[in-house]
Amino acid sequence: AKRLNVESVTSHLPGAEMMVRREPLGVVGVATPWNFPCAMLTRKAAAALAAGCTVVAHPSSQTPLSALALAELAERAGIPAGVLNIVTGDPEPIVGRICADKRVRAVSFTGSTEIGRLIAERCAPTIKRLQLELGGHAPLIVFADADLDRAVSIAIDAKFATSGQDCLAANRIYVEQPVYAAFCDAFAKRVAALKVGNGLDAGTEIGPLMHDRAMAKAAEHVRDAVGRGARCLTGGEAHPAGPLFFAPTVLADVPDGAAIMREETFAPVAAVTAFDSEDEVVARANDTEYGLVAYVVTRDAGRVLRLGRALDYGMVAVNRVKITGAPIPFGGMKQSGLGREGSRHGIEAFTELKYLCLDAA
Image 1 (cartoon, rainbow, N blue to C red):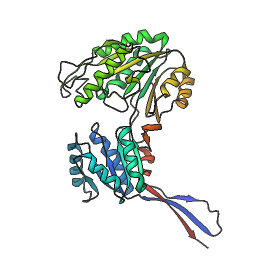
Image 2 (cartoon, helix red, strand yellow):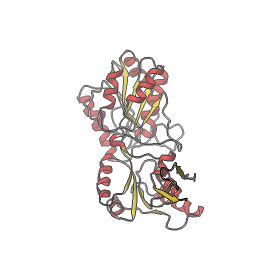
Image 3 (cartoon, rainbow, N blue to C red):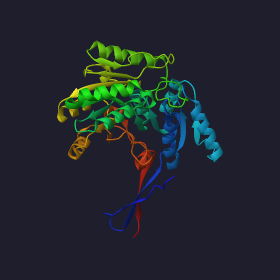
Image 4 (cartoon, one colour):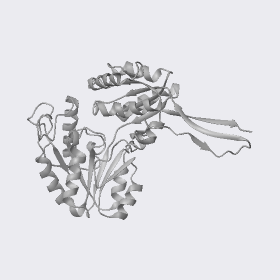
């Protein structure tokens, strides 16, 4: 673990020496989702443990075994009993108890904005520190000056990684009018060629969705968009690979009022729409309660700086998709969450500032 440095303060009182240090907050409650079950737990628990806190973690009841395996590895590595604790089962009583118990001083949760609101309500009576990584609804903005092949590749990676089951997935793809038709054509051809199948088979690019509800939501988003005038360029229905496979889908001319333009899809369904001006697309991209990540594809350096400021998102990716990692502060604005994970900001979330004023006279 990296050290948490003591901060000195230039004294404003005669004969006094001042310092500020960070101390462990205490017991940290953690609740993680089913996607990325190892990464979600380690990113939270590592920071809390490094700060000197103990952890009580509840993994998703749909993917509990990864957390139990990590607990076993922690035990083998020498982490003392009672420092990293995994509690599996029904989330309602477990997470409810974590939120209500006054001994728990912080709760770190990754999941939907709806559940995040409930957790915040339940933690309010005991004034817990909250670290919430909630929903996303990422826009991907392609300008006419972009390299078209590169823009299509970026859109493929941003939308279809993990079959779209990712809070960072591009949900709304805005393409500037002069290249809109060419982008839609090239994008649909690439998406139609994606290999669907068992994730353990070589070459597979699109795997199954998590459960029946995900399949139903994907189908409903397609039906709603087409019913509002969108064109389905490829896919749009279940795939013959199995009951939880949805065909990679591209919807064009999707109106802003469609459900897929307002809600996370968590499926391999891409919604594409055209725009005419920079100001217009910024306003449309920001017109959401979410603010996790936005993607921009352009070769205009001035535009990069303007959009970096104008987009109301905690993270902005320019001409690339992969932006996450341990050194960066992961998190969003608005109702995409509170606080950050990773970097020094992620560990500071599990500490309390203590100010010492010493008489040195």
